[in-house]
Every structure is written in C-alpha cells, then in structure tokens.
Image (cartoon, rainbow, N blue to C red; front, side):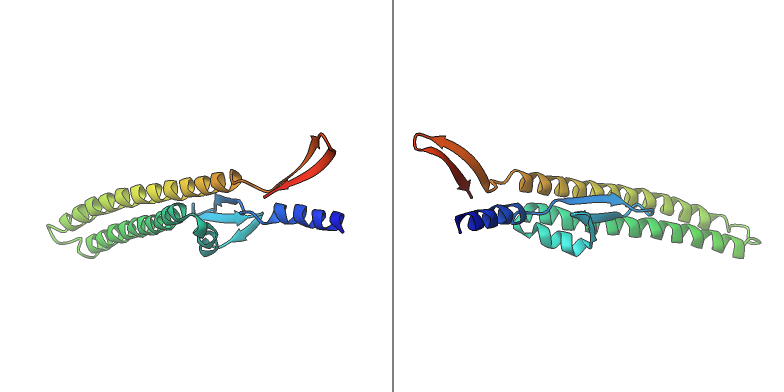
Length: 159
C-alpha cells in the first residue's frame, strides 16, 4: 500500500504544476500559442496566466496593442487607396494631386504608428510569456529524494 501511495504522489507531482507556454508566428506574423505541443487560443493562454496577475495583464494589453497596431496599418492602406482612387477619378481637375499627397502623408504616419504599436505589443506578449514560464519553472516543486540517515536509507517526499 505504501508503494502504491508513493507512486501516486510521484505521478501527481509531475502533473500538478503549471504548463509551459510556447508560441511562434504564423504566415501573417500573428502569434500562435502552444501548451504541451497543442495549439491553444489566446483566451486559454490568458486563463492559464490567471495565477500571475502582472503577466496576465501584460499579455492581455500586449495582444490589444497588437490588434490596434494591425488595425492602424490596414487603415493606412485604406487611406492610401482612397487617395489614389480620388486622383484617378478626378485626374482632369487642375488641383487633384493635393488630395493624394495629403492621404499619402496620412497613410505614412498611420502605418508607422501602427507598426510601432504592433511591435510594442509583440514585445509585451513575448516578455509576459517568458516571465510566466520562468515563474512556473522555478516554483518550489514537490520532490522525492533518498536520504541516508543514522537509521538507514529512507524516502523523503517534499511538497
């Protein structure tokens, strides 16, 4: 019976602790998250981090920054396209070049701000996952060890 309970405790010690999160970028440079080799959603990753509120907050805010940055980059493309369409539709007017000039400058600013926000968000997500993995790997884990004492060898289980 003691051997069975000892085996049970050893197995539970291996599975009871936090799961490490990995991520990589897909074709569109969006992060794809993996836990124990299985693809998981962003909400699942956020749920895993609930025991570490600072990392969870950085992760969630970083994802929001990435979405805002991507939206600004798409908006910049839309503004640039709108200026080009306006120019081509009014090519015969003498001052039709002014609108595409203004929209091009606006699109340049929007794309730079969007890229900056996306990069900052990506770095926040990356650092929050790194800190989370560091914290769960350095927790005091349950340990089974063989100790030689004056009374003979004994197994010690620390949790």
